[in-house]
Amino acid sequence: MTRSAGGDRVERGDRERGRRRRRQAADAAPARRSLRYRSLTSPFAPVEVLSADEVGHIHESALVLLREHGIRVLLPEARTMLRNAGALVDDETQLVRFESGMVAETLASAPASFELLGRSPERTVTVGGRRLVTVPVSSPPAVSDLDGGKRDGNLADFRDLVRLTQRFDVLHVTGPCVEPQDVPLPFRHLQSCLAYLTLTDKAPYLYARGRAQVADGFEIFRIGYGVDRDEFASAARCYTVINSNSPRQLDIPMCMGLIDFAAAGQLSVITPFTLAGAMAPVTLAGALTLQHAEALAGIALTQVVRPGAPVVYGAFTSNVDMKSGAPAFGTPEYFKAALASGQLARHVGLPYRSSAPTASNAVDAQAMYETMTSLFGAVLGGCNVLIHAAGWLEGGLTASKEKFILDVEVLQMLAEVFQPLVVDDAEIGLDAIAATPPGGHFFGGAHTLERYRTAFYEPLVSDWSNFGQWTEAGARDATHRANEIWKRELAAFEEPPLDDAIAAELDEFVTRRTAEGGAPPES
Image (tube, rainbow, N blue to C red):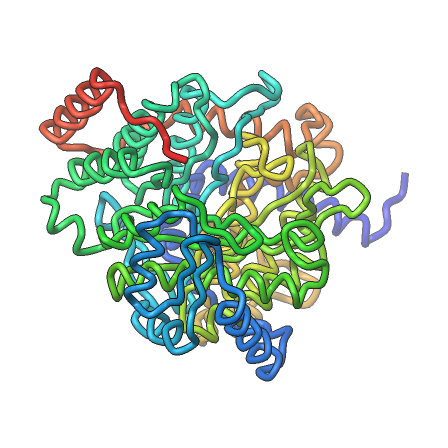
């Protein structure tokens, strides 16, 4: 059979690419674990979907809502604190109305950026500016993988997901990756906090589920960080997410969390759960106004407790399926709301939290294109804290190990996009271009050989082989490759160093508090 010259070039190119991939696999496999991923700064200016006047209109409308209609605050202690700071409180209705001057004063005291300290100093992250801090999936009740299918969350899978979080530098802090439902509620926080400190050296998460649980968590983290109580309170070493009970309500455990985290100098990510058409107006402008008002109310409480307490403006505005009422994510509305929320956060001078969710029930194309839409909205909106960045599935009801790996691939590619494109004489390589004859190739040139090990991103999941090679290797799709990868990563896991005396003190505390009955959640 006669081949065209073009066909020869394609075949030769395939062979050369195959040889190069094998060289990279043998010589540069560790390259995917880039220390550059530990600190990400977006090179892109945030996209603005709203005009300055429109941002101001939403902000002023939220102030009217707070001043004239208020927020229901269910915790009497919180109402007293806000009354003493100048808010108008009706204890019968539990409504708290905020004067605009009070809101402005509390916003002025909240920091625009701060550090969240890792247990190891190299895991410390900066929150604010153009920095991006990523967090894995958080709080689903179920877990799934190709081997065991969907099942209730349990401690073994929780610990495995924490291990996976530690394995990838592109995930910067830990999160409650799945609910360990086989651990009774009074003891669940003890086992979760212990796992964060022994399986990772990244900043840990703590649920605001009542005062006793928070106190236990702070003590575990204080021990794990090897500091006394005063030093623990001097900088943020853990974080929580506070969800208002939209519309216009802060419940008792959320108020307790805002007070206790602020008093201890720890981070609250205040995130109204405003789904347009359900818990918020059906219009995006209305939903954003409600989100903004609820966030400002929570922020005000933290600053009344402790001016300068670290806080993040959180946003989770999306829409619902108006035929079923089910939450929808990765939609055009979510994308626009993420851009607008970033503008509102910057308007009040605070770091911005967003997410990368999907409503898909399977690790399929829908899951990834919705995740990518959410992710791009968050990143282009200037997100500083990206929660649910890896593993989210089924509208947040399931943590998927395969989805976790696929999302890590996307995050690592995003991290590479953030790296600067270097332009200098060595990179341009005029001598290399001149030394290569017309119609030749650069595979064997000195310029290539000096750089091929690190010239391009080495994928974690993607398969760049041709169809024949892919078929011969088993025709495995990305989900099945991800299944193999999470198993490989867990097999290679090593616990980060932890001082023996600290480890013993942690075990003693958890054992003692368990024997004492732990701490049930408060509601």
